[in-house]
Image (cartoon, rainbow, N blue to C red; front, side, top):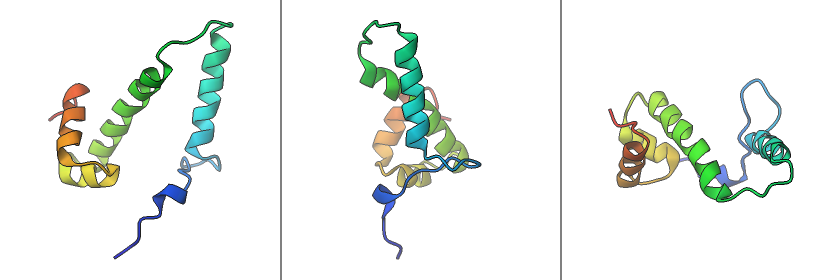
Length: 92
């Protein structure tokens, strides 16, 4: 069976040599620049809300709606997946 070494892998975006974390860093820097010195509030929740829904949608599309496969890909249990799918109105 294959080993899980995903923690050391950088998630590269297709067609790009830059890992996803660099795109995220750039987006956050642009966000901070757009604040014109104002302090953001609840940034953690904001970022998770912006990232989680498209993540779950993309994985569900990739697995053609198979929740067991999606949960495995995401590394979460099916109950957590179902709760998140319900939260983001992605249950089919």
